[in-house]
Length: 154
Ligand SMILES: [Zn+2]
Image (cartoon, rainbow, N blue to C red; front, side, top):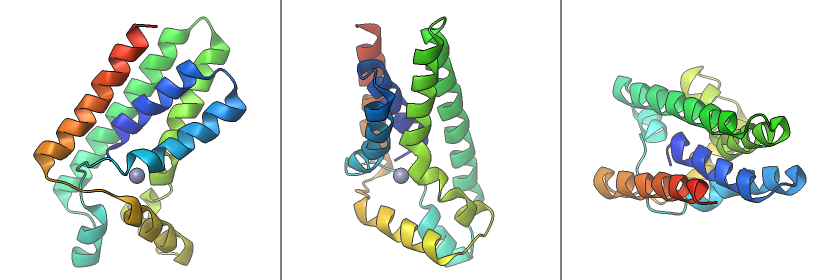
């Protein structure tokens, strides 16, 4: 799944669960759960196996998605101000929700090929439920919209 929907899910968890000791681990766990929803994202792993690194197009998509994720998470946290505690909880949950993929970043983009990172990627790959770009982006857009709607209505 792209990082932006993961961030929105993390923010939704933060706004519903005030206890950081529950919310942050739950946001982390949400990453794996939502990988099981049929989705599409750049195929960094198969491209790296084929060409030694992700294609330019996938790198560009990843850069845009990561920026959007960062901006969205910061914006939602900003909305919680002046409640600093809540804003920090939102940031922490957003980060926890993308952490499993952040851990993969050095493998794809810094060519860090350690054993544990390969194992981690294989584990995450086993959870992925890939579909075509059309349906796969639609499910993610629906996820983001559902969270926005839900955050606005509480
Ligand atoms: Zn992931």
